[in-house]
Image (cartoon, rainbow, N blue to C red; front, side, top):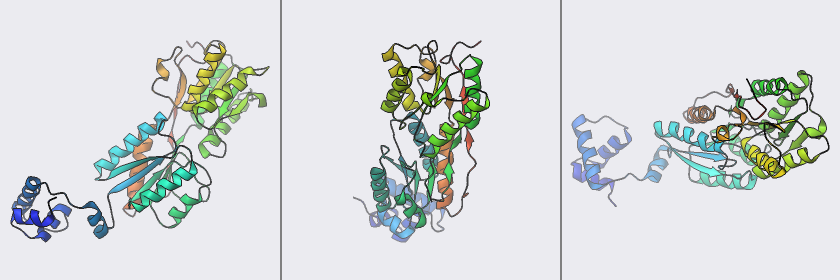
Length: 332
């Protein structure tokens, strides 16, 4: 492997000059800069990132840990966050916690051992002492979609409450009166917010959700299927169901198909999260779309701001929007 000394000899300058050119840490003439850059390219010299990080206290890397990379929401969000990181001269390392706190904690520990400059976290659980510990130590952290009990860190999220209110009005306008919900975990902020918004909007419009029309899942496909089977196998099933995320919606649709229940005819279905294929279903699925890419860009920008010693402590939520299709019944 070529060394900085080899680059200096090839360019006919000192190793200090090579370092100034590569790290942009001091003045050099344009002719010297060009000579150094040409020599570096010719001999294939690559600076030692670890050694540079020990000198500068920065590795130029960001850690992103999500709760489930199989969820298209996180795939799109990660891509958008990475685009911002690359544009700002950083690289991003992705970890998938699988909604498991212990796996999340292990990723955090290993990423910090690799000296990442900061962390973007979509917490697996609401009570996470391992996250509180690193925030209290001063590690730059930005949370995505979910808050953590006792942790003061910027939270990037989308507010779906207005869109959920619009969805309830849409269901009622189509003649639905027995509204049901498959909620995510209420101990997670996003699960609780979506649940409370749907319950409140249904009550406000005059058709409150009955206890037998409420089921809970864990934001995963299998739980959505199990919850939908419970709701539809009861003696008095709902005539329209709001499913609180895309993964559970997929399971709920599979359950309805296995039961021979027709979406849009026998029961209305709507999803929080607009997965890419929902518009291709027959009938196409009514969904609440989060500004996913914008969330990823905002999260990375906020984290880079904190790494550089600034950045806001609180961030205004972005807004989700309702996309009306035909899965709750025919529309004009």
